[in-house]
Image (cartoon, rainbow, N blue to C red; front, side):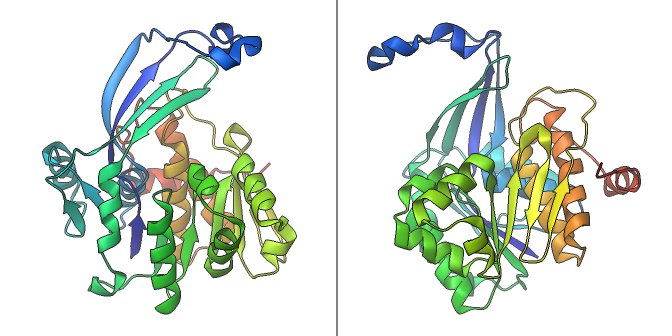
Length: 308
């Protein structure tokens, strides 16, 4: 069973029918004041923990979520009930509203986002020792730095392997704390920019990280992904979607596919294939939890998947 530590949020996903670059003057960045008129907006269920859990459930898994919803939790709880996703470890706060993400995507698939998530700080009051279910792997996704540090420590103390996935929160860590997280983790995952930023902040290159017996996963968007260990480097192609509707949530879907396959005992190459296929479904639909697939459909696509 996979435990996911991370955010639950209502996503307000918007489409901008032009390119951001046409509305930003580089020579005037010191007085930046821009407004984008969007032609499409939809409220969706989101947050890294919610997105990952949704895809794991479609794959036949039974994820556990460590997160917090606000006083307006009813819609999200009803969504979880519909898909039979456990919510017993999700705290409901009456002091604040559910986290919210505002995401604008331009026609070139560039994104500008704003996120309000004060309620998520309350996750820190939970403890892994309080979980009755058998946990095989913990995904520590982007959230408050202190929350990530706490659960990394608990995983280490309980000999539970975990995935360090700091995303945009990398900048909150100093050199020593980032090195600590990487040293304790079984997996490090991020896009190419995030991995480069980790290298810069830790003053460790990828080889240094791999020498600590890690598995590093670098996602490359439409170019696929790379899975690295001390002994091998595996290149995984992106699985071509039927259409490109919205890239938001593809990374979370990738993680769901990869780590579901991993706890089932699949080899790393097969895990990467699962990840790529699941991510393609997210791209084909607007929003992060509006797509649907069956495990049988994934297995059929897996049989026809080629690495090159």
